[in-house]
Image 1 (cartoon, rainbow, N blue to C red):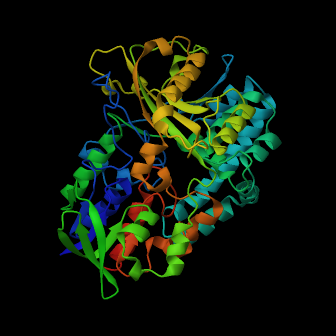
Image 2: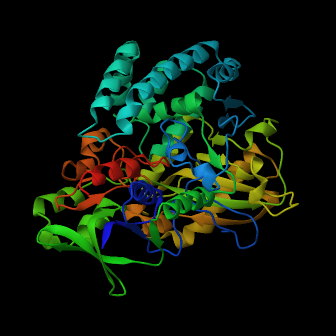
Image 3: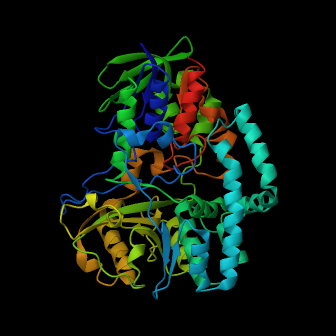
Length: 518
């Protein structure tokens, strides 16, 4: 019998299992795909470009610079993980050659903005200071249990809040505002407005949605802490995490599809695989989305109607906006219109104006592909030549298009829209880098259809990160704190506290919680 069975081999499931194994528990991870990692994996997706390594989902370790980091706690570098820190980590590219580099250094970022507006540069610095203070205060809570934080966490929160109290009230007001309101209130230059609007479009909500102002806080966090990128692609992060799991005695199995989580005498007792095999465990941790867990893997006879209704009504892609990710292989690196080659490896925020972004999101809500194509684009191979064949002058491109419909109003599917949309997105990048389209060897499109095969309703964050689905209510009140109504059954992942993203915090805190029951 296992001490714990972890269903789902994404990075949160692997993290949870590794911490349990490190504590001396017998644990196994079951993953239905042929590979581990969930959305943290790498593949040669472009058929016309063998040897070009792409990252179909996540490309960066966005929050692992915040300590305590799972990378340092688990000593993942000793298991082969190597990282780089791209600088600048982000940039805005305008339609007429405008550019704003986003650096870990606030002073350097402010200097970039001053080229367009000294007033906006000052306001940006103030905004960054306020949000960095907020993240400094909130970090201990984000890395702990949402309803039963440890005493030292509560004490740390109080101490940090007293130190940074001057900026907490303004941030609280910003949390309740919309990105559009904040941008229009604080800034005047089109360049800064566009930069922030394009970044905010990644939240899959309209710019005028109240209570979504926190998305602008994330960009400020990266200015304070930067980002990390695994050398060799996201699969290298998964490999190191898996190696650490095995080092501590944990097991992992791929192509092991769980058909049912077994419940005996009211408690979770194990799992039954699709091939009929039964595994028994003292605890079961489901690193899957909550709808799949409670509505498909558990017999509804063990769950109350109230809980099932709550889970079925979790808000997921509530506005009907989704994203499409395009991998592009290039034969050579073209020249940017702004003539700043150092920006290629950063998150290049592309979009003509805030109104341009607004129109794109509105079109997606209405159920059609808008002519506007705001995106986050980057070239992983600019900082890591291991992702292209040895000696190749080519490059890999990652186009994250932030405003496409979850479903089409005319009932059509992505099969007929996939290639035309890729052409549209490539043409948009060509405006920022003339000749880009001529260097394309091939492309691969991951539409909302492919995302739906990976997670319920095709959401990266599993449950919308609206204020009513965060903290002690993530993803719902009945499933908060990693527990479920069934003793011995837990859940973790992007749909659990604290949020989506590659950081492993949910997996780590789930493991700490489960250990108290073992």
